[in-house]
Length: 484
Image (tube, rainbow, N blue to C red):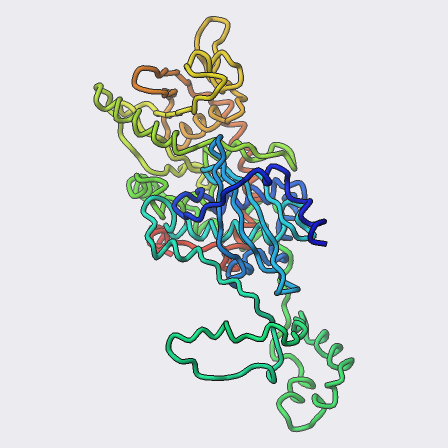
């Protein structure tokens, strides 16, 4: 059986010779990335998104069933993540879960050695993603990660099994004693206690159980609980499915006014308080409940379309810093800002790289040279990059480029209110290129309408469920900003 399950793991993983334990290198996986991966998986579409809750992926992580997460960085900047996750039905068995993602958090694929692993989005894969998301949300990753934070990655997975009381020895441990060493792993386990969704299910199960005489002992508490009617009306929540408007759902309407609605003063506060962007907890929380300009290209035009995310690496981040320093030392006026929430569409936000000369959006891209190109001219003439030369010999941005640069810039201009943009393609101080990108009002109007439909029909109801189930939590900074 083990050999058969191992075959579900892609062959390229066999070429990985070293797995590293270093939380500082973990990708920036956030709630939106997990959401995007699940709805784009071939096994799960938007209407079936709630299936991942029944698979208990989040509970696996919360219960300490995820072991140490290891990683391997590929030559193209992507990363493999690997962890053992304890099985739910047979706690003595563990499954190996793997994830491949980009450094910005875009999840590309997942695999697992469990029976559902070929579905690409089983609970064990989800549990690994939730562990990384928890670490990112609580600033436990990155260069500032301390030794104490790094120790958190040590999994709490143990080879233990439920057992009867007769096999448990209750003793007071001595100082320094390791109780786990004395566990009798051969002690027989017991069956899981079933969960009943209604009082009628419980009564039916008891009536078919050999314990029925115990429940019939009059005068006992167990008898009273068995024969009495429920003290409260059973109200099983209905499935929170898709809907087209806020007026049709009180839960979503309440969420929108509480978490998304912002006035001009609060928009300005978010811009100033999130200048550090990815280093800010407030910045992360404000983004996790919205569609952002950088992630908008991942929203499928059709169901089950594969999401393609922007490829941000450490090289790109360092290139952005170097480009800004160059501009500042050469007379350009660059102002850094945090997240911009659209005043018209509060569910949409953008984080510009900077504002140039007070009236122009600055967007910086720092591509990584490869064996196919070493100069920007070779990159632009290769036809695969989002920038190409038109028939007039002018460098322009492709409307339907693979990396989604055009949509990102247009939506960022929409959110910031700016109507001019300079795209800076940066290689080094001796080789860079400015490209003018005008505002396309018709393009923005069409895509904002499409994204609005997607958000209200498929995304918002899922976010509401996650908040109500305490799976999506917010920082004190975000609660203070939104006055929650």
